[in-house]
Amino acid sequence: MKFFSQIFLALAAAVLALAGCSQSSESEKPKKEGHETSQTKKQKDLSGSSSLKPPAGGLKGIVIQVLDGDMIAVKLTSGKTETVHLALVDTPDKKQPYGKEAFTFTSTNLTAREVTLETDAQERDKEGNLLAYVWSGDKLFNEILLQQGFAKMTGNPPNAKYKKEFSSVETKVRKAKTGIWSI
Image (cartoon, rainbow, N blue to C red; front, side, top):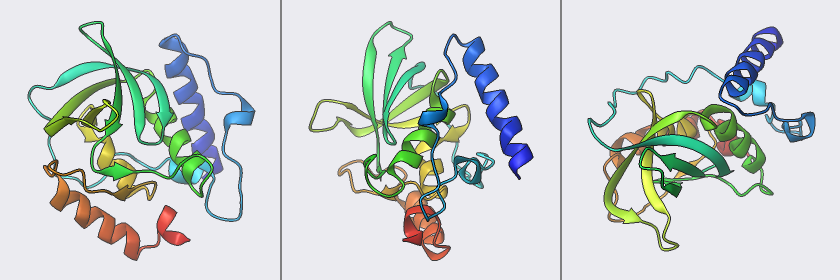
């Protein structure tokens, strides 16, 4: 397992280098703290078993910064930069259990990646951030955070497009005591 995670980290570093980003320092990597915190244990195949399909439209852009496990900055193709809050999911803050791991997981998997942003009934949260479902290729990253146990589902009424699917994923992850559900 360690061998495969080292290969994955090397590939991720190469992709980031090609995209003009630098590899994160050793001090930014997660450390074991008594619960399953090793990033290598969490970097599973992101294919998941979802039947969800990306939208035909949506805003396109590149993730230029990860602010938290569920908040990113995206430079849209229009040139505008938007702070995006991932809809229907909530990750722990960095100082809470699994918060740093959620941040690292999101950073590793979204930084410098092209994404499609899909909005729902309410386009902005109360702070004015774009509230969106974030698609990386044909994968819905909001759902991946739930699958990996880094997030719990939240109710962002009136946003509920994927509520049924997210609820089903959360139930399975909770029963398996994965990630945040293990403590």
